[in-house]
Image (cartoon, rainbow, N blue to C red; front, side):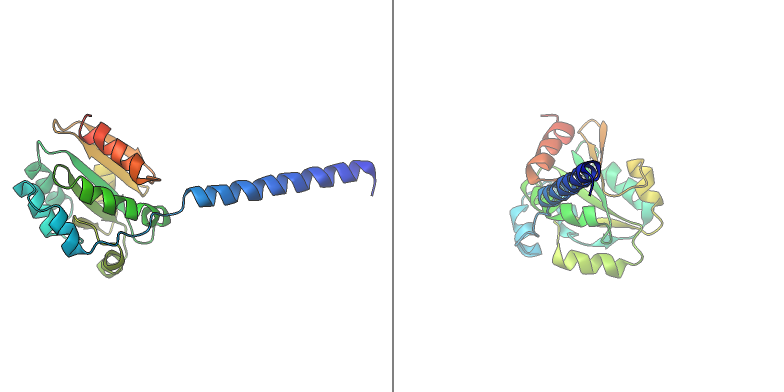
Length: 196
């Protein structure tokens, strides 16, 4: 090999090594938070004593609700004056699955003062979502959105995951993409839903 070809080959090998190292670091930094070891009964026990509107949500924990956009809007109206977090997700969405353990934990830790809701968006069947929720239960219900239109109307986005925060006054903030940690979601809830 000529010196020029050796230099090009060495440079290509270096780029390949850097790419592999970067991908490994990216993969390790975005590893999903494991599912909560809490059962639905334990989650409900931890949020017991919530205000009535939040108790009604906890009573529907891990359910997939029907009724579409009108039902979700009616629920949001009933929660007026309460901080709200809405997570648009789907069981087929890898980033959604990666952040689900985070939502499990934060919805329990904040569930006495913040309303959590889900939108199960563009899911081919309720059965897929319910099977997923058996492994990853949450302390709040999700509304079934097979077409994706409800999720787009609420989150102003066709992508998943998306999280919408409403503060007590109804001001909203939309976060596109997954949350990488419990701490990051806790910070967002405090800042955008609780105005802390």
